[in-house]
Image (cartoon, rainbow over all chains, first blue to last red; front, side):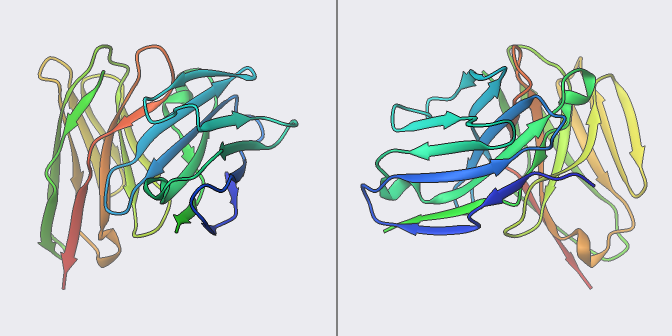
Length: 115
Length: 110
């Protein structure tokens, strides 16, 4: 069964450093997302991406965050200057278009620890 | 925006039935979804209701009443492996993104 894959599974970084989280969405999907989940809290939407541009972003997704689809398969989330409060699990997700777009498929997540 | 309310936790014994309620307030509604998340794992899709009524998928069923802005997930014949967090989610009005509730932690005891 096709799946969303993410790397790294876990990253520890120092405050102020740049981090890039990588994702390979399911190949025939056209919508891509990043969500985050702080330990013990709910899954929060960060950004959605369609047709090579951001379609929607939350208030969490400030100027420190950016997304890119550098080639036909990868989808990346960059945090320019990490803060302690960026420590969370980051989930990449994708969905196809049409009615089936109501189902979003999540990757296993990248656990980011900022120290 | 969207807001969803669901109970924070539920405990039940193996073989029991659990109902997780979800009420929502949205600026536009395109259906109610349910996701399961085991500790440290990815949220995985369980069920979707776009129209009023009951959807059944094996031991799990989901119900929606759009007039009441209310839905529920019914877990039947509970098994230990059903211990997880369950999230209701609604789709955004202008996009396919999902907004999640805070989650209900279900603990199944022997």
